[in-house]
Image 1 (spheres, rainbow, N blue to C red):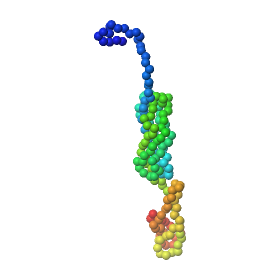
Image 2 (image 1 turned 90 degrees about the vertical axis):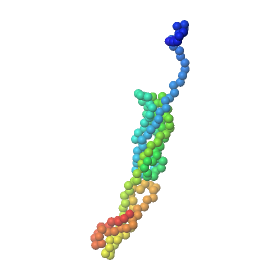
Image 3 (image 1 turned 180 degrees about the horizontal axis):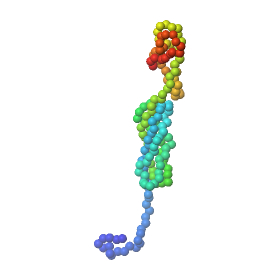
Image 4 (image 1 turned 120 degrees about the vertical axis):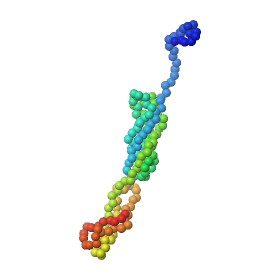
Length: 171
């Protein structure tokens, strides 16, 4: 249609007009949620959630990733986890582009529980509870970590003659 003070002096030669223009992919923002883990000697991380902000409803677009890892393998709280190799999948994925190729979250690495074992030496009655240990070992240490069980003291439960009555005192 035409409008304006002199619009009645004109007529359109066609009821439509065309031109070429581009529709560009919409940028979407990736977000991840990382899981806490028990120390295992490596930086591998798992993700419980991968989400996108900015997808037009009802489009089906999902966030994918190739790997996720902690910045270091050591125990700590609030450690940075980075998801890399992010991509898009789904029926409408071609209509979108990622605003970033990685995403981060914070998660914890907690200490691994190890099991101590000791071997106490037999002794002849001497009136005290002092004991000596011939072996102190740990089960559950992650290879190649070097962790040694130490004990500052070992004692029998009682100084009287008995069998199988050994215990470790302090670490």
